[in-house]
Length: 402
Ligand code: PHE
Image: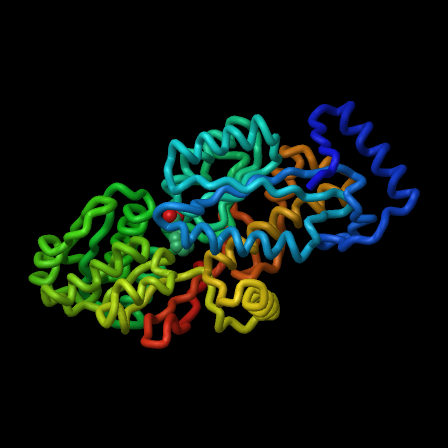
């Protein structure tokens, strides 16, 4: 962006920065779009530059997810003119390839070379867990838009997420199965190598039993498996009312096809990993008439959501997925926190101050709900249940946290 970079971490540097900012403010900053909820000041970048990392799987498996999340985040920054108050936001984008080792290396580069104050990323919990440890250690803010694994945030001061977490999501689907579908029996097929899948399996199973249902079969596979016939045959024999498949759209498409081939008649249930149009290409007829929990629906009526859907369609020529919505919310959550640091006379280039502000987020109106964080930095907000129809996902109901 060709702007002078300010990386002030010490108190002396902070004092100098504040003096400079006051002087510039007194002189009257130039135009620009004020960001966030406050007044915004001059908005000409005269305060300095705040570097933010955006780490997504832009290639490799689930690159689709990475691009959508990144697009959502970029739309948010763009709408604010990449400015908060009189600070410029400089985005440094990296591709983690959905690979743990690559992701950790990219994050180390973002911390030491770019000196970012925050990293938005990654998509899957499998990647976000290892990078959260590196960022926590370095005292750099980690905000994942989409990683739902329960154990990602607890006990970490610098780690936050913009999405709900899997215990809640598994419970939503158990409740939906019992109350909406009147299911008495359930089977589960999950990926034992993926903490996202395993966490969902456990929370669904516990909630389904607690709500008086019976779990009649639990089967597993490993990431990249293609043949699920053996497990599905066992499941078919158990004749469950519902089959919970907590994984991403690509294995789910295959599983749905093979399930119907071996005679599984259960209604299939899933979670946010199902949210992609490719689910229909991969699952064909077999995937129609099933349900999954999600963070958001384009059919939602709140004003934030409507404005977002419109802006996203205009910029990218397609409907935003929940990932795009969460990327957008994550970027705005971060800018909102930065704005509040500026408003209170703090140093928005100090990751610790951004962390404190983020933790104190109150009533933030996001596309995916109104957000405040619980003690584990999880937003408390509802989930939606969507049906897979011939015309794509259709909104069925909203489930509030209890
Ligand atoms: N929740 C998934 C995880 O934690 C990632 C994901 C989010 C996938 C939203 C699809 C849609 O691994």
